[in-house]
Image (cartoon, rainbow, N blue to C red):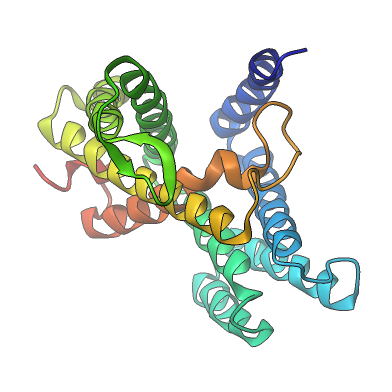
Length: 256
C-alpha cells in the first residue's frame, strides 16, 4: 500500500469520527480532546528523549489529563495555573505540555460557548482549507520558497493560496452559521490561516532541530499527532483570543 493510499484510508476513518464528536459535543468531544492532549505530550516527550515509561513520565502524561478535566469542570483559573506550573518539569520537558494544554483548553472553551459548534468548525475548516489550498497552489505555481531553512517544500505562492482558501472558507462557515455573508468572517479566516501556517512552520523547525522527519507513526500515511495538528495547536488559541475580545457573539464578528 502506498503512502497516499494509507493517507486516504486514515482520513476516511478519522475525519468522520472527529466530525461526529464535534457535532455531538458533550463527553464525546471532551474525551477526544483529552486523548489528543495526552497523545501530543507522549509524542513530544518521546521525541525529546524524556523517560515516558517511568514515574516522571506518568506525571508528564497526567498533567494535561488532569488539566483537561479541571477545564471541563469550568475551573479555568485552576486549569491555567496547572498549565503554568508545568515549568516545574524543566525548560525542555514543559514545551509539549504547554502546547498540548493551551491548544486543548482553547478547543474545549470554544466548543462550550453559545456559538461553539460553528466557532470550532470555523477554526478546523479554516486550518484544513489553508493546508489544502497551500499544498495545491504550491504544487501548481511553485516559485520562491517561504522558509527554505525550516521547510524547503513550502512556497510563498502556496502560503498565499492557503490564506485565500481560508478567507473563502471563513465566509462560507459564517454564512452557514446563519450570520449571512460577512467580510469580517473572511478576514478572520485569513487570520486563522496565518496562525495555522505559523504553527506548521514552528513544528517543522522543532523536527529539524531534532533531526526527525515525522513526530510519530500513530496515523498511517500522516505521521504523528503533531504532524497533523501542528497548525490547529496555534490557530485554536488565536481563535480563543478573538472569541474573548468578541464577547458573546461568534468571534468572526469582532471586525464588523
